[in-house]
Length: 227
Image 1 (tube, one colour):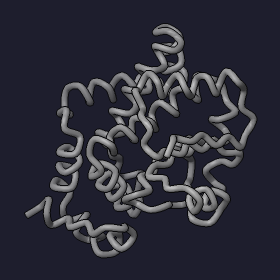
Image 2: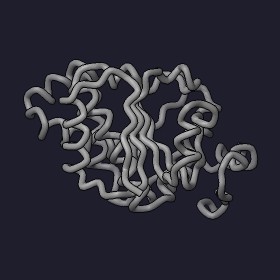
Image 3: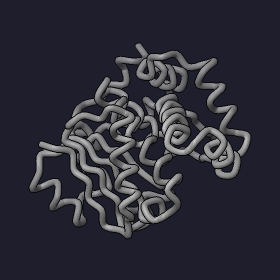
């Protein structure tokens, strides 16, 4: 089955060309992917503030998209991956779309390299979602790697100075610190880095293991990481 783009929002011909260009630059093959450019924002799906989302359907199910028009698409097609882009980003400036879509496509690349990356990172976020964000903040290595890819693709499509100005306006100085952290602290093995997060906070993950594991299509044995 071919990759498919579904565009529900106002979308220029130029933006469609950019989507194709990003897929080409990242060498995205035919992998049963839906890219869904929505006419609704994340709060409609009770996602909080999100510009985009990658979902490994084959391992993690349909997530928040179980009961809406996307359901019909899933039911009539054999898809393994979903990239959802909010209305705000889909109808925003081209550079916002390029950054967000490139970020989410890198999540797809991670999942194709190792499906466990999707599973474990999703598990970590579910646990962290039960905690007080004012006291705990977590930089996931896969998220940082996706930001690195978004920067690279944005520089290619626009240019380095435009990308630099965009980063300074949107993210400020903290972005450079994130990339420095990625370069200096995180190894090339993202899955192993995710396991380290669980090991270093093992009592937190054990506390929620049974409750959260029920949400998955496959069993996650956290004890595998901490024994």
